[in-house]
Amino acid sequence: MRRSRFGTVIAGVCACLLVLAGCGTGEAESVRPGGDLVLARAEDATTLLPPTTTQNEDIWTLQQVYETLTLNRPDGTGVEPGLATDWKESKDKMSWTFHLREGVKFHSGKKLDADDVVFSLDYARDQDDDDNLWASEFDPIKDVKKVDSHTVRIDLKQPWGPLPSYMALFAASIYPDDFGGHDAEYMATHADGTGPFSVDSWKQGQSLKLKKNPDYWQKGVPSLDSATFNVVTEDNTRRLQLLGGQADINQEPAPLSMSQLSRSQDINASAFDSTKILYFNLNNTKKELDDPKLRRAMSYAIDRESVVKVVYAGYAEPATSFISPGLSGHSDEVDGSEFDMDKAKKLVKESDHPDGVDITIQIPSGVADRELLAQIAQQAWEDIGLSVHVQKLDDATLTTNRTKGDFQVQVSYATSDVSDTSQMINFLSVTDDSGIRSGYANPKVEKWAKQAVAEEDPDKQNELYAKIQQQVADDAPIVPVAYQKALYGVSKDVVGFRPYVLGTYGLKETKLKH
Image 1: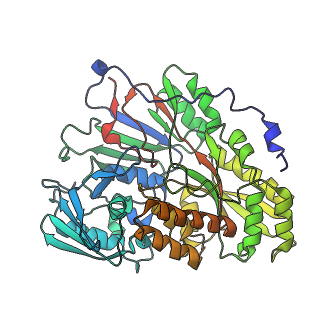
Image 2: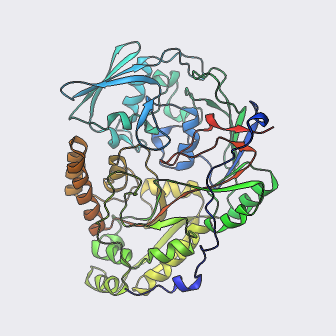
């Protein structure tokens, strides 16, 4: 195995970096209700309608505004009651019954009832709507029925044990029946949820402000009066705003800036456990990337050990599979992530494109680690005979391109939205018409995925997941690169902010010192 030259460029870069744990512990006597939290992030939200997006900025925002029947536990181990207080599987395992929490109101004032849940889940699983990017996630559902005003039954096509976990998926958010008399286009810019915050204002491309929901069903929260997400595209500007007090939280600081943040007495530079995986999304439908041999060659050409050191400053681990070790179905036995330029060059010559191809990597503007990763891949792939270009685009264009399949390669990342491994399987490997739009479709993977969700024996289920991971490594529809920690720079005036293992966070627990 050859050593990448990138490993020698910045040797030991992570040796001097600290991973600090915890955020804003603070003194209880200095914390009082109220305050306006400011978060600086690189990208704006794109929509307020959950099932029509895969962008994390949308998800992180909408999970403060909308709620689901179940809620993910912060440690990622399962779900707990949300808008449903309890649920039960039928004896024949072909249906689940959910009992709804009483006294819950939407931001518009309407009281939550079963009709709202039936409408919302039917909308989430509508596969005839091209804008619904998550419908296939709910394919095992046959029907959603109202039992009474506060009881809903979900009938299945096949036994589906993970269903309560999928009811915590943000795409299963609950809206008023018939969108309260509006349409999907209206809801894309006007949210009406039951969450601890409602949308106060949205200056697209600049900022989105949430305000406290005074009628929230859970008493005593949220503490904050408001939370504002400011769009600050440049990593260094976000860092300076945090250090200067213009922002309370720097969301996803550049890994190489973490050591600078940690030197400030007023800042916690924190790395949290996460299911986050960074990967190159390859459009398998493009003729340049339609051969698994070429795609696998691209995977062999990436020196993941050096990427972790150079790009992510040690705040990551080399990816061996597209399933994070934070999920129960992760396999340690996957063959295909090793760095081997000889294998890579050989596979190119054996592929349908022995003379190489011309490809473009699309990346978001102003995100330092994505740019550096793209540069490393560009040089590595050129070394195996490809012609590679890097194109910087604004996030809205990147999202549109991905949705329409108008890309060859994008630098992307994903975190699991539910505690069950099957969700990442569906999102990243059963993606011919949904998910990341890689265009990948392998009948064996689809068959094993369906078998896995119906399998009750955890060992047999994990065997199926391992087969899927190896097949995906062989086909290389995506190139997994690294498992990254969730990075945040947080003012020490912030108390109680701690991201969940599944990658999201709840601001209803967050407080500010005064």
